[in-house]
Image (cartoon, rainbow, N blue to C red; front, side, top):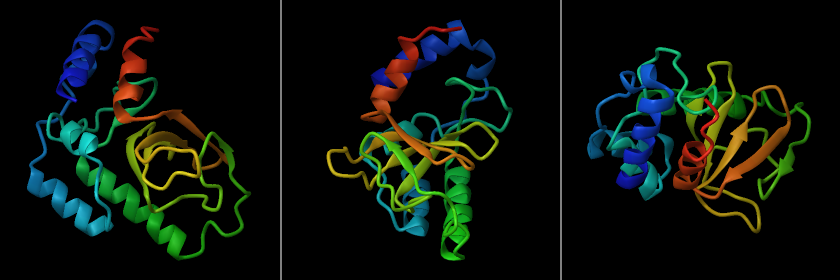
Length: 171
């Protein structure tokens, strides 16, 4: 993961120089463990490694990957808790059925085993899927739209998602 981060930071310096200064310091292992406990989830090792290099970004609305900013631990937790409250309160029950593109479970509008790691600030997130459908991979990267039923697997892993961004120099 360190190698991927180093390449990503080099890419940022060239393509999104303003974003480099918005990256947070590393998260401590104990901080990650506390968030995992509150969520009742175990983060994949690559996510822990990622957060222990940079704990997301400060909230400065400078996107790093497409139009997404990277979430720090406290925002990962806050997003999860907010969506979990909505789920538990039955808010998603009348929502349309999910239209999966790739092996994403369609039983849930939002699945409590999805970890939001990036957001566009409008309720649409990039998530790590810890509960993929048959044929999927634990840790695959999926899209979550707050107002659209499509859920798409966009990468098999966090590393693959970041690497695809780097090789996509579209800016």
